[in-house]
Length: 243
Image 1 (cartoon, rainbow, N blue to C red):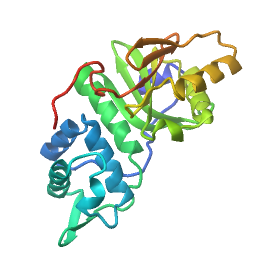
Image 2 (cartoon, helix red, strand yellow; image 1 turned 90 degrees about the horizontal axis):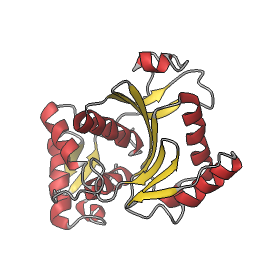
Image 3 (tube, helix red, strand yellow; image 1 turned 30 degrees about the horizontal axis):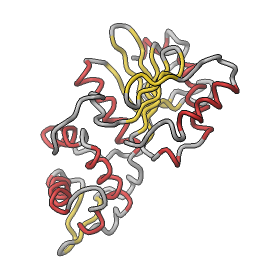
Image 4 (spheres, rainbow, N blue to C red; image 1 turned 45 degrees about the horizontal axis):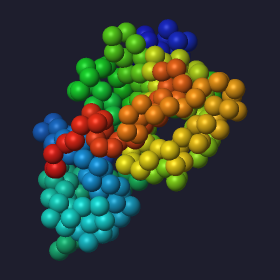
C-alpha cells in the first residue's frame, strides 16, 4: 500500500484517523460483527446506539428493527464488550469517545474488500502534505491497481456540495484506477447526489455525463462511480438473508 502511494508521489507512514472504532477486540466477536454489518438494519441500529450512547434503552433502538431483532443486536454488543449494562434495562457505550459511525463504516468497507475480493487495503488514512487535504477513507490494491473509496455514513440530505468537490480533488491527487463515492443508504442517488455531481462536473468542465449502470450504481466519469448500499454492500444486486 505504501509503495502504491509512493508511486503516486504520496508519502504515507501509517498515519490514521485516531478516533476509536465501534469494533470488538476479540476475533470471534469481530467476525460476528462483520457478518451483522452486512445488514442495513444493523448499521442503522448502531447509529442509534451512538446517538444515545450515554443512556441506552431498548425502546430507543427500535426505529429500524423490530424489538426482537434490536434486543438480539443489543445482547451481541453487550457480549462483545462494546456496551455495558448499568441497570435494569439501562445500558451505555463503553467508549464514549465514539460519536460517529463514519470510521467504523470505513473499517467495514476495507474488510469487505479484503474478504470478498482479496484486496490489500486500509482505512482512515491521513496523508501529510497531500494536495487538497490528505484524508482518504479507504484505499486498497488489487492486481496492482489502486481502489479509492469515499464512504458516507450520513444520509444524502446531509451531504454537502463541497464534499463532492473534495472527493474529486482527492481523485485528481491520488489518480486511482477506480474511485467509488459510496453512500450508506437505500435512498435513490438521482434525487440529490446525481445533481450534485452534475454541478461539480460542469464546474470543472470535465465533459462527463452521468449514466446509470444498474440499480443505484452510476458512472460519473472514467473509472469514477457513485453508488448506494441497496440491497447489500458486499455484493450489490444480490439479496442477503435476514440477520
